[in-house]
Image (cartoon, rainbow, N blue to C red; front, side, top):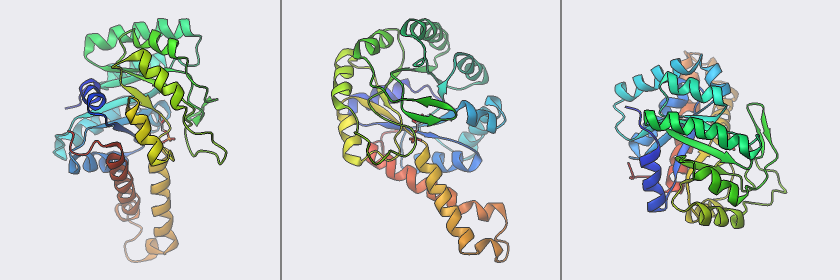
Length: 287
Ligand code: 13P
């Protein structure tokens, strides 16, 4: 059964580790992530952007697929199904469809509007026992057409949003979606420290997990990050393994064209990436 992300993140914050949010794109992605979480006895959050939601035929299809897998793969670790960077309407649609967690990204609105919309969604999520993530200070880079400049969050605005009763809070600290540029200045630990001081026990979320060096991840966790989002890294691992399979001509041998064979190296590569991240984040054995 899908669970809210509240309990797993409260435990993570107290235990000084982070739970990974891995974004899903299709059945293979979802299966690889769930099997790895189960094997490592780790809690996990499946992230779905609005674009990926459309790609997978809509939120109800995703809820059906994930619930089916939980049962038929015998998944017993805590799993949250979470809308990533949702709009107000997207969040409502996911709540309706059976997601156990949503993010409302109001970071592009003036703070008053972000507060107003987040307040309304917190009320609905609380009534249904669904966790809700809010965002202050946009995450840089481009994700599904949402482009952010990557500014650092204002710690006072973070406190304002945290006090609305959200479950977890994403604060921009110089992080970027996708690959980091050569001249990236790194995470602003000063901002993170100030945000944690203002928001206390609130689990903080680090977006743009792809390509952040291990020591920065560890330092971020020590400063209150309890959820880390990873998307591009699984895509790159899948792409590289699939490319190797084709370049080695394996699709031309025997039944190598069978999608169950063609997609297998990519699925295995996703498992390896998820394992590596769970080990780095410290969530192994924490289910
Ligand atoms: P990356 O694609 O950089 O890993 O970012 C993922 C993310 O933050 C999803 O919200």
